[in-house]
Amino acid sequence: MTSPADARPSAAPAGEAASLLGVLQLADSFFPSGATAFSWGLESLKLDGRVRGAEQVFELLRDQIGQRWAGFDRPLMHAACRAPRDAGALQAVRRLDRLCEAMTLSHGLREAGRRLGFTQLRIHAELGSELAAGYLEDVRAGRATGHLPVMQGLLWTAGGFTPAQCDAMAASGLCTAIVGAAIRLGLIGHLDAQRLLLRARPLVEQVVRGDPPAIEDLWGGTPALDVAAMRHEARTARLFAS
Image (cartoon, rainbow, N blue to C red; front, side):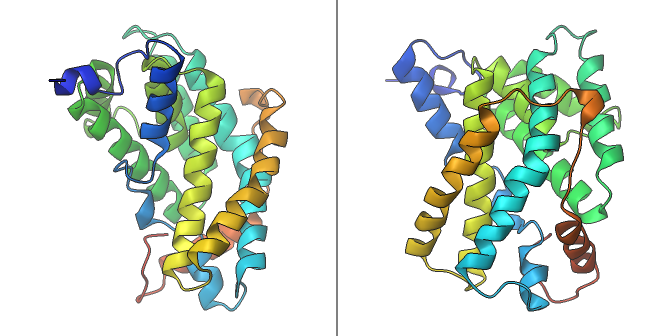
């Protein structure tokens, strides 16, 4: 019988099949990441009449992948992948964390990044990761913010996954969260969601073929989504937290 410690994702995958199983486990919507609480501006865009169906949802996917994730989230994640793992060197990860906080202008998006990163830390800590448990203490003590892309790079690399696998997990999680929110908002059906994921795949492939920008060159170009997230903060009746 397999013990929980034997199955925890923080253990380094041994072999190609185990590695693939680990990627599938962490990227699956069944994993309790907390992503289903956020729409990344989609709910606000629907309420404003800017998104009415599958084509507009795809435009949001395209912008999130090409204009946000490619130039901001992915470089932060890769920088965290490369960070050393001893306690003193984790200062580099904390610096990335603070940079992510400072460069995320919308309060709603900052809160989403912190909450999703915190959930990753908590779940991995409960699954046996000492690194996650230690960084979770830093977040609770106010020494770090725990933003999602930084925590993805930190925890997934510690679990034995390559940067390319981290790319696949992060991009899959982002796309699945957006199309899942679109389903819950009544904008698309389940078959539409699968079509959108297929259409988004070449966009992700185009991004991951190249190296991410250097941390000094972080960029993002989604002003419409940022404004939608800000407008969402003031709404009293809403299904999603962002």
